Length: 362
Image (cartoon, rainbow, N blue to C red):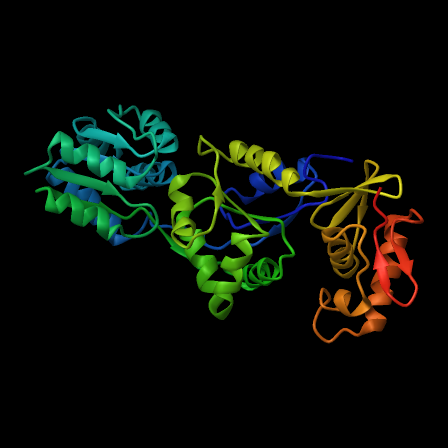
């Protein structure tokens, strides 16, 4: 077997770092379905960003809330293009800087600035609690947005007596080609992927919007058979609100996300001893005595049904219910024949005359 994730299919909804995440998963043997849920549109020439930058220069903020690394870098790069980078850095250097996470902190420090505090949870709520406890009445807070407005955060700070200047550095937009995302929705609803990864909370919302009438089917799948893997707690929050159990690493890093998936998915695999062989079921493959046997969806569905009640006979009618709508009993026989051919080991799938099929467990 070539890797810890061999036989598993993982959906990737990221856009900006999709190649990096895909490569890490494929190196571990996973089959990847790439379906960016959103794309980032930089706003370097946007009049709103330029106006917000001018406002910072005219009325220096007391607090800077840096939310993302890409956003802070983009803001400073845009200011460079306008000839305002040095004045902006000078103004921000005098502010109390809060970075929401390590990427924002890295961008702040790369710019020669110094952040004073960062939340352990990387959540906006913890940042707001910290600022309220510190006292913000009468202060101006420059809030670098991450993709979309944060009205709840702004309202909470204004209620504490602060003025908030929102700095829109980029915005989220729909993918140029929405077809891969709709295909991933169908695969999740049909339980044909084993896991789906999310690297931002807006990507969760975009996938659920794309699901449309299939939203409940997608959520049901992620509540049971499809692992929802999020890069951190902020990303996981929208799914948790829908009652979806989520796995997330302690540190919000792509490498840590992949390690979490490597730890989690193999534990979900079903293993049975059949006719003297060790058989393990993964998403699109079986592992028979350590050898990977990729299988098409219909044979895999039959094998999964048989393994759910090992040793017991399943009728053709019962197995028919595991196949796509419109199939007949002949399709069951074809699926069993293809299953036997794919496993390449006689005796693993046993015919019981006039009754059906079973796995002869040890």
